[in-house]
Image (cartoon, rainbow, N blue to C red; front, side):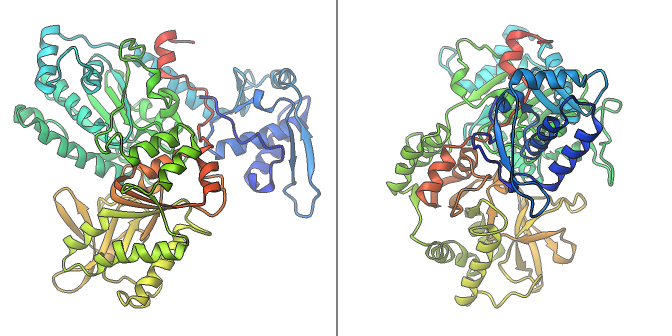
Length: 593
């Protein structure tokens, strides 16, 4: 997907760049042999910024004859302008530098300028996927149909994309299952794991993984629930499906104070099947290292929603492979047998306001989507006229029930039912500001006393911010502070088997979470969601962020936002520039293209 960095504006403001961009640009412009060091300086400056923004490369064609106005990094320096030459001149410049033969830090590949590190990751990943796309598994037709018939009761002549996904994945060593929230991805994957185990003559070594601890926890909860749908299957088959899921880092063997994982091409994971959920959150370096650590015969299934927010770090691998439009792949044509999109959501009524709003946002329709909110249905509505009014109402409706609960179970149920989301951690309309306001309201209402810095209190919601493998707590896990039977305040976390109590003195780094960022909620869902948008446009805003926030809500969504901010957000897509081809292209063109 070739999507622009924000180059449509003539002027690039000083805040678009950070010190690292300037330092790298100066260093490479001074160290690399170039016929035009000034042009090289600005190319690297923009490339460094692009990588920070999540792009793996810079399209030279986007810069051709582009004039940028900027302020130098030194204070009190006058603003300057620079105009890039034509695309031909830019390519001549980089060709003359002979980047490849000299193994210089920059790489030019098909009009894309890379830092060599990210070019190498993309090249490694592309070769790994191409080799896997050529691997097929054959099963006796009659036995395959028997297994599928035992899992799906859909008539063969009727379209069933879950059945299609399972039958396609059974014949592949690499498979991608894409779909929005509630489309049945976990049920499909569970059926696939059952089918693989039924077809094999031995118990398989299977692992489930996700990018974060919270996503891994949600994954195993969903798989456990999905297994109940297949109680007619032999119990030994169901028991072969893992009852735990790992974070990607734990799976690969993170080593303290080391950049490299324990598992790599020399020490691969001993797995027959690997399923990775929330794959849209995986950045380019981590995805490359994952495939580096897998045997060639390991069956790999990646699951995710390409329309959600991409990874925090560099790369948009999953969306590059899948595209973001499920309608481009026809069930009849089946042009890419290694990927299936699930299209029908079972979480929302397809004609309901939440489903319609998320669809309109993805289609980039600001006016129609705003009207859906303005109609104030029972599912979607615009919040009150002021942030104070909204937060006061949120305290009354969603927070006070936590503090008035008689048991930890009641409190946790109230807490898990709703969530207030913001876009940023700091500044105006941020998580930090909203948390402070909500605590103040709770003090005024007499539900908490004035909290001292770092002190806990009954009902305080917390968010873990650092993995602790010993305690099985992970970045993104949420819980409550609650007194145990002896009255001692402890942290309590929800699990599939009930509440888990942890001494507050043993907790990893954590923070108060009356409100949390949209990014932190990926992989989660709540009955009610309140979304607070910033009072002005900021670079983080995009339709992908809105879509992610909207689809966290199962039954009710309340949005606080100005129309101008909403319109600009829906109009902006956060697609990332990448040299990775789509799976459909790789399937049609074959390797080495």
